[in-house]
Length: 176
Ligand code: IMP
Ligand code: MG
Figure 1 (tube, helix red, strand yellow):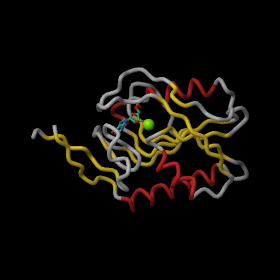
Figure 2 (tube, protein in one colour; figure 1 turned 120 degrees about the horizontal axis):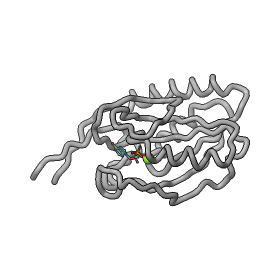
Figure 3 (cartoon, helix red, strand yellow; figure 1 turned 45 degrees about the horizontal axis):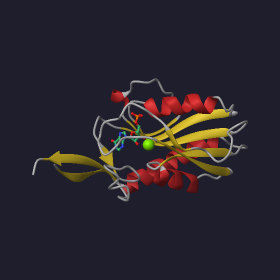
């Protein structure tokens, strides 16, 4: 099967929306510092652009969880591939996600991080597919709500490809 990519959210719209999210975070966390937890690999571009626009003190840590294999459906299990370097205890943390789909990954992660007793815990996702939700998640900062389409670019991949696209594109599969 061959795929083509159709531009869906332009680089300009992404940057504009990320600036708006950063403004909200700057406002909500005024006088505090935030610990961004970038969920690898998909959230790297988003975390960078968001962090660049924050004016409060920012710390960044990384975590990698198992996600899809080379397919567009979840395997159903979630495991930690890379854990945080620093404990979350007493910190105001914001989990930075590329996309919320079933919510399985984030639900598991929130449960794990709660055990570490952060001062507060918020969720910031660039994209959200609410129609796909199976696990309840409170999203604090949400870039774009999208339909049930498989998207790539700006960090998101299909079989590890297309992460480098500067925009979000929809993958169209066609028989060749
Ligand atoms: P969830 O656990 O079902 O919410 O899946 C979340 C993860 O699945 C995301 O962090 C992505 O890594 C991946 N994912 C879900 N939808 C897409 C998509 O449309 N494109 C690329 N990756 C996706
Ligand atoms: Mg992800």
